[in-house]
Amino acid sequence: MSVHSAAGTGRSTPAELLTRHPAVAEAVIVDEPGVPGGHARIVPDRETARTLSRSVSLEAANRLGDLAWHEPADTIRVAGLNRGETDFLYREIFVEGAYFRHGITLPRAPVVLDVGANIGMFSLRVGLAAPGARVIAVEPVAELAAAVRLNAELHGLDVTVLPTALGRSRGETSFTFYPHNSVMSGRYADAAQDTEVLRGYLLTGDDAGAESGDEGSGAEGRSRSLDRLVTDRLAARPRRVPVTTLGNVIRDHGLTRVDLLKIDVEKAESEVLAGLDEETWERVEQVVVEVHDIEGRLAAVLGLLRDRGFDVTHDQDPRLALTPCHNVYARRPRAAAGPPPPPVFDGVPTLRLLEGELRELLTRALPSAPPPGRWTAVSRLGPVPGATTSAAPAPPVPAAGASERVAVLARAWTDLFGADAILSGADFFDLGGDSLSAVRLLARVEDELGPDALSPDLIFTDGTFAGLSAALGSGPPTEEVPRP
Image (cartoon, rainbow, N blue to C red; front, top):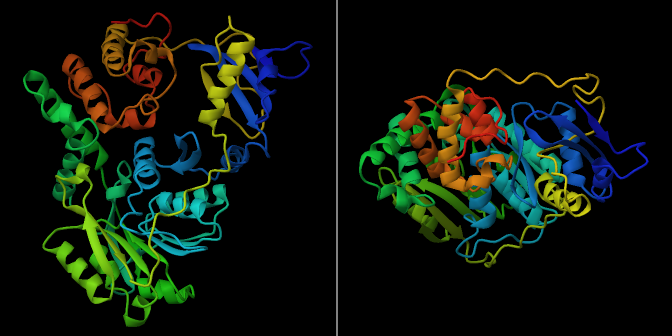
């Protein structure tokens, strides 16, 4: 394995060229089998790439645990459980502004309660838009609460994390955690209901029209793959979690006002609201709550908020038309209304953005050499794995029939993303994939290779073509990967 370092060469190596970028403090490029251009390891500059530098320092301190860094846009880096959910939450909260409709806004230095915080995406949206914001994030799932803390620290925000559920009184309750679909976790999780909600969302999500209108033999395979994807996403881990009340949270933390109360707790919204008493209700200025309209809950929540003096409206995301999920928006007449301030992303570049700029830099300086196919940000270069050996490790021995199996994956991959996507190194979501694309990919592979040929979770955890082809027994793809 050869190593191209940025130090002591006396000439402009690719690694030295990388350090000319102001966001790169150090760099090394290591040759890796199956990775055209090698593997670039960069140390982000502490000043010009603050968020990226802070994230690799947190990871080096073993703070990441079972989480992973995700970059749902060029402007933001967050810790999350899986890439698909992180992208969904970013799109819903930052791009579509799901919680800032119908006049809901943020005043100067707001006090916000984020109930059902998940990984803290809404807390980030508040903190990045409103300097001086104080956020209380309530999240009973330990893994998700850890993500909220990490993301708040990464972005330097004032977020207090409470690892508890909310209800009518203090105590303890059973709770269902879906690690592959954490946004549907809750104390009232129901396997049958949740399956129908998730199927309904997938069938009305992005590009759903093409999927729902399909007929013929392929439709049966897609339906089977949809069922497998839903089953995989709803693999449950039951546990016990503590419960307190919303009124206790407000009093215990000395909140004289709550400028915005956001609630997304998967069918426990009525329980959460019941934890407010007369005195603490008066401190709440705005409420946004997702309501599951089961057994008249939507009408009950609307009536409760109107009785408490709020102006109330509600809507439903078109993608949730086959589900009982609605959003309710409530403001006191005295509360200011208007669009919220936009988020300020002052921690760029992300690794995603930096990689693009560095590829362009190398392409201009060394047009005949391929840029690195893999990029990693690290807190320090340290010993380069394998650098002291004289030969690269032997590639894995392909399983029998591996080339034919990977050819099936290659055809499905190129039909979705184009032939160039096979060797790009980008993962499924970077290429524009979503849950429905995952269904189509699974269906194509299973139609030709049989049921269970590919685990649905791999698309969300190691969703590069190299990773998926390795799972099919091929090892990492090379230039000789069969193309359609």
